[in-house]
Image (cartoon, rainbow, N blue to C red; front, side):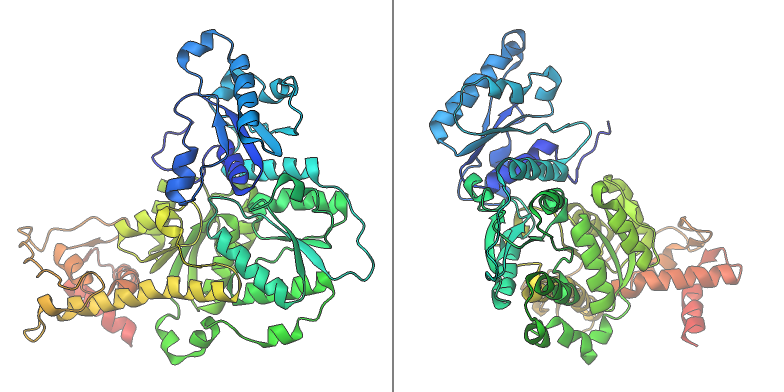
Length: 515
């Protein structure tokens, strides 16, 4: 086991909580000690839900371990059933309670409840949060979904699978995808788990196919439904203009409808900007991407094909989807980074010297330390990534959101550079400088004189070193080309056998590569 400050995913019972909290009429009884009871914090503070999550804990203490913790669980189960009156219940154990091996599923079977009780066995020390959510949804669908015969000639109908509580923009994605399906004349039968009841899961069979928005959560259940209910499912993820067009074509084929008129329309501003002369400022920007598999693969495609960025790093913490990410990385000439160690991700970002980072809450902190712009594209996220406004990642409107979220940090970085460049000009007063950092920026303090002689060097990880004056001059170059300037200068130094880079070396390299 590795001790870490941050984790990309929680234990698998948190994934079960996400499914239970997304649904109505379902209650989750979790065998857990005091200290594992943080569901309220996750769902009411971070996601800002207006209701408490439907989770009951046994909250046994150390003194209870010498008694009958099994009876404690059965009492909590019966009390929750009587108090909340759910249609069905989930039972399971937290990572700590797993060690005492009380078997919540077996205990629930002897509790005498008349409602369905679904045990979810989630190996806390082998699996993680997304796997737990996928396994929970799979067990629920296996329990309630039944095969149904569709009437010949009936209007096309589908289910939407995958959105959960605490998911990154899931609520807004569902709204956007519903709009796309409605324009195609395809009715939505059930959305699960978000907003569904256990009784709704019994109607899943009354659809022609399934739309899988998040394979990390719904892929396993969709595969089971294809085998047992005869329902095919979508593989295209509608993120970005190209992904959305592919998704529209795919669902139109599954539903047997004509999408030609819809595809002929262009309702996103991203392609317009990519064709404009202004977009040349963005061409070739180096971008590093690390997220869950769904968003990482989609972001790499949007960055390379729709914004003209150069993808210099691609990875995921979703080990169950590592194959898909590796295949995507090969298309960009990269080796995928598959890890759940944020320090390894930080080292890879520093080595790649990107000009934009697309990642999670962790990458936001890493990019801030490195002085690189960042946009969050995937869970894990914090409260600011659950906006009150509609802000999807999917569909044509989602492409607009991506455009704003990714391009604006680069633009604002240029603005701040210009402000810094002219701050010392006698006609430019810092107190009146317009800036997104504040209406009245404080004057910059004079930099202390470095007593280190110019001959001293700063050790670099490569074969050459930089003098303090050389590093100082390098920092005057805008951040969005600073990495390229450093690489070119070090390459020039190695070509000419220069071991120590000075200010003169920097400008000699600039002159050399300008020719």
